[in-house]
Image (cartoon, rainbow, N blue to C red; front, side):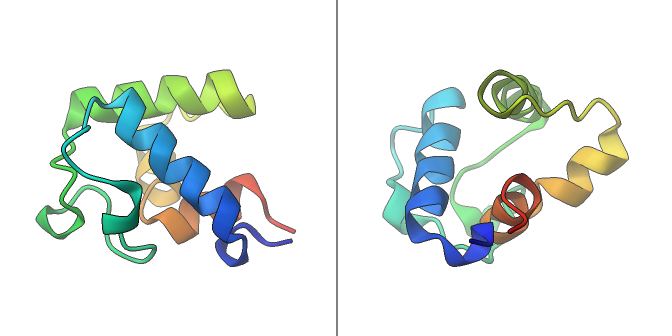
Length: 89
């Protein structure tokens, strides 16, 4: 199943982001699937250090290496985009 269609997988990703970036003041339910993660609208207040944490977490949990900043920005845009990248079918 494509990642953006898998509600459980997207919830797992949201929870992982919250835990890895120490954003406990927001719940997974408050993060919209299609909002830009590195924007004020997401409520996560992510910065470059959080980006590094996310990159390391993706490598550890999904064996995905996103070392190129351009590729990282393309993949980690929204929860839907990230889910589709990690679970294409």
